[in-house]
Image (tube, rainbow, N blue to C red; front, side, top):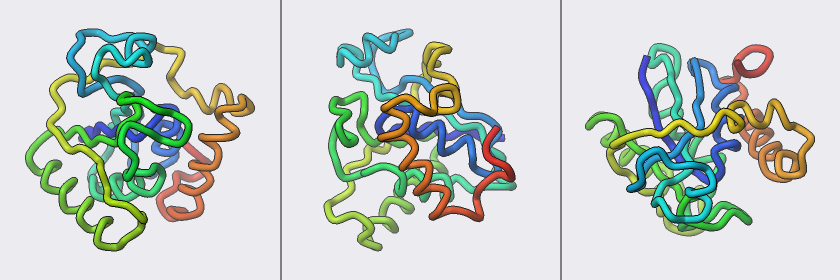
Length: 180
């Protein structure tokens, strides 16, 4: 098993999508890329820690390649907006790939260049790529948020459309009968 750590707006959105993907064993919401030890959701949202909301994905590279995770990542969020995803604004919502080794860094740069060359987005990609120093697990109430709150306004307006886009665009990558 390997790990991938990605930030692309609210971690609830990314978690809901990647939980449904073949080869993904688990998805954990958390914080990374900042300068404060053991940050809380409130501190991160107050923009005092430098952390991004991220998900840490544990995946089987025999079933899904890191590059394929990144292709989904670049499809389900807007990698062209700095410190913003829709109405969510602030550095905690930045687009970021936190790599676990040199191979992941090279793959991230290659996939980002491929996405840019394909002109899938009308503006330049601003996704940061940097080595992961430490991942801080989010509070338990963030775990499996969409599955536990599917009818909340945020889930219906923001998460459900991203999940629908993933399911339509990557149907062959879906786990049988949904996520884990």
